[in-house]
Image (tube, rainbow, N blue to C red; front, top):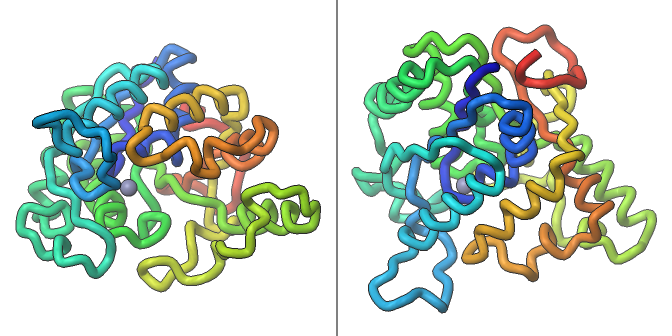
Length: 267
Ligand SMILES: [Zn+2]
């Protein structure tokens, strides 16, 4: 059995991009560790915070619940401040993850990778899937930490832009009021950083089937009630549609041969 360390920017990122992978790894007996770069200080503020409870308190509690649902064995924090979305004044905060010294942040993660004797680490693609400053930092810091710790296998989590486009086109053609069929979202259009969402299929090297864990993945999303409300399209989708949209997770493995294969992070 191996050890997987998943490096994510904010509480709730773990379930959307890698929830199926984490649940599958844990179910197969691997050790699974979730490391969060930030506390998610600038997420949606729910209107039911208790007296003295902060958004960070809430989000930490939510991610611990999500981790339990997924079977994650340990949740660790690098402790940086959320940098906010692209262009926000919080980008300039010296305590933000965006402003953090790469070597210093990478050493914090590398210490965990060494302590856990990690076989596999997951980071994000070069533009953090959609250009969020903290997500880009996961790419830079995660990849550097793997180098420092000598972690054998590094997988950059991404979104398969071509598969996403095909699903949207199919939903529009079927005209069955799938939330994917709405015309307000175009993954090939520019996201925050001006790049389209995710990566083209030609640059992805691993497609992981997590359809058997789709309901666990959705249950982990429900734990983040302050951020992913019941009305969001993630949670409203009929089961079959959810499996189609979220039953596969995609990665770019460092050093892999070009071309996308169906497979698993531990083979
Ligand atoms: Zn995030």
